[in-house]
Image (cartoon, rainbow, N blue to C red):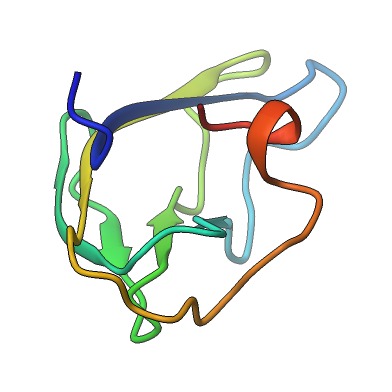
Length: 102
């Protein structure tokens, strides 16, 4: 497959004893040790944006879950630049076999 493209899926489930309304609920999704994101397409949510660093997606989950024990799912296709760009954000632990993205 293409090493510069991937599909991600994040599922958040709220425990039944937790409240289902929030002042704000955002998830930052950083991509360490890769080039900048050149394209992304949310498949399940319109609340996904690319931050100015071009290496982090921000998912605005919203203010309310529909019910106790409910969940929210975000799935997206992400494409990274082919060009070598010195990484803006790196993490020495998230490489090779330790990477959550292979």
